[in-house]
Amino acid sequence: MIHFRHCLVSAFILFSCSSENKDQGQDPERKMAFVLVDSVVVDVLEPLVIDDQQLLGEAFLMRGRNSRNPYFVNKNGKVIKAYDLLNESPNGIGFNGAFGYSFLGEGKWVAKDLLYRYQLYDLEGKKAKVMESINLGLYSMTISFYQTFFRGLIKDGEEILFGIEGNLFDLNSLPKENRDKPIYYDSVKTIFTYRVKDQFLKQMNAYPATWEPRIERKYVGNSAPFIAYHRSKHLMAVLPKVSNQLFIYDFSGNEPVLLHEVTLRHKYRPQIIPEIAEEEEYTSSYPRFTGLWFVGDKIIVEFKTRIPEDILKSLMAKSPMRVDELPEFQEAKKKFVKTFYLVIEDGKQIGVVEGLSVPGMLDYTSESGEIYVNDNINPEVEREYNVFYRLKIK
Image (cartoon, rainbow, N blue to C red; front, top):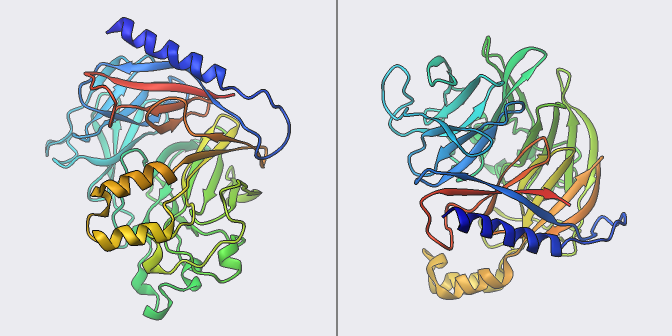
């Protein structure tokens, strides 16, 4: 098994290096690459995802894909502690586990339980505090295999949670006729900071005032934007999914201050954003953004092309309930759905990466500039251990 792992990594390194583009121009669409450095192997049978990494100690907080239990894993892949929290004991989190986990400094971590409460633990798994839910009610539920929708951070000596929460906004607060109209974007304050000490909540609008559809009073759906936070530099990034704009803020003070409004470009991205009615959100061919990460001093933005609307609608006519099970759907997905990454630095787009050089999905990125690709959910070869490929931007 050890020889297989080394051969696998070496092969991918050769492939990645051979695909490196030598063009060092300033074209925002110049070709760049993610180059494989090495891999992190974790000897746990259950498929894992990375929820967070310490800034200094560099240990990981991983989550069992099936059990939802957290694992404390060192930077080389050794399991330091496997927590057993799926119970109703004083240190338990409940039998259903959590939506996600995040470090709070180097010696604590936080779990968001299924009641939307934030529970604070030390590294031994002892519960220190349960914070009340910030929700106004339960209006929506979003579950992601990879993404965790909050981050723990230390700011001016204070322990703070930062994130996005759809249940901070009650759609019923708008008149029915305005719920699928542009006025919706003026009201959605779902980005938040939540101070641990006194549970002080601050909310921010999820759709920036200079976002094109908001200015043009154009409705493009109600999907929440992607957000990211650089905990060392206290930078916040906001990326509406239907957009060609990335917003970067200085959040070192009490309020975020806009630093950069980046125009995002790609040959497969239409310059004009179409109106997207609520009933067309699934079938629309518009290439929505699918991810946002800080990677060292850079930002990477992910988007995917989509199955053309006329093809998808014809497939849905054949099988409206389970269209994804049709062989024709899988063929169309393989043909039309491609993944691209836009690279941003110093408030400018500096290049494009076409897909990943290793199998799997982009799972996590670090503020030291590392990218981790998860090949554990649907690996081509069944394994009794987890592999995370560690890449860098070249």
